[in-house]
Image (cartoon, rainbow, N blue to C red; front, side):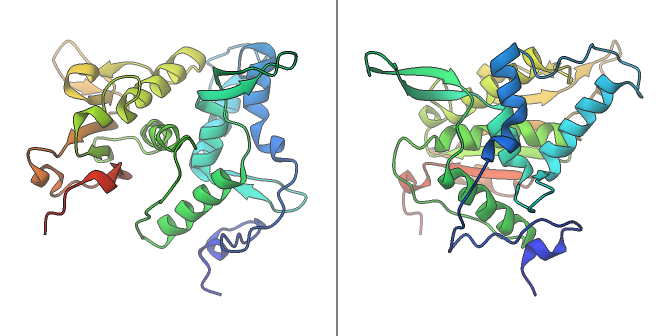
Length: 263
């Protein structure tokens, strides 16, 4: 009776992450990604900024799904909002195999449905509802940095405001910067949103220099306006106290097994 998913006011099923059930028809939750793969865009609806237009309502619904997830009406199967975003609005380096030569190659593409992702995101959602932290022990090559790099961009749009900063912490800047670093992947996600959706794209600050991004703009008087949500990458190598007092929708420790024992 105290299961966190009983608090949702709909017919979604209760997910037992310790006893996974058989997953079926997960492409139901990837409709936007499949549409983009087919047509090169998320919707064929003609752009119309009118607040009551079909186009505007479409993007409002997508933001609702980013925040609350998506429930399949006929059986109650569902995914959290962060997984909906990851599967439909985040691209990763995916290993594919050429159908004729059987040679493997890497390509930038949307993630494919995988039980491990389903369980991870439900585990994380159950912890969030219970106000708990999570820790993941994993093998290499499962796209963990891509998953975590999709967290903050999604949060920046569904939890706007300067009081909702997101943090990616690492022992060394090498795990944050560049194409391989988690903060570099955050930039990729934000660039993808800017290029492929009509959502606000203006940013304040030098992301590559300061490892800090704020969505918004500065008017002619120097006043910051817009969403004002932010993401920050912080290296703790020289000063572990940099993490003291941070709070927000996301506090992610990248490769925390490499942190020295500070006790």
